[in-house]
Amino acid sequence: MHTVDLYRWRLVDPWTGRAYTTSYRMAAADAHALDPDAQPVESSLERRSVPDGVHEHEHTSGRHLGSA
Image 1 (tube, rainbow, N blue to C red):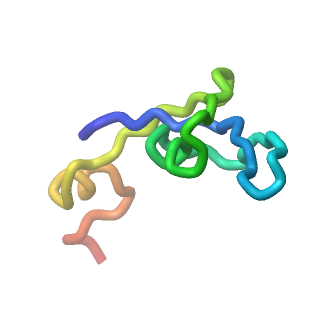
Image 2: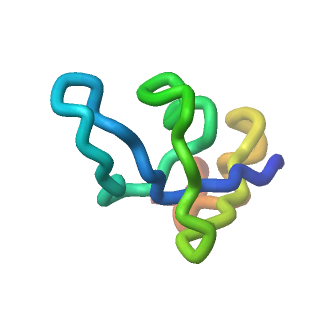
């Protein structure tokens, strides 16, 4: 399991040059792919635990593969 930090971001639209804040959270790599100067909205931090593989996913879901 690893933890991912997700934020809403302040970006600049390349077509209009206008700044905006995303309505959804995303990882830093995704935000910087859209705008290399993207800035996180600090108060929007959400940390999620993400499974590294299927064997860990089974322990995070409410349903187990062996049950009906």
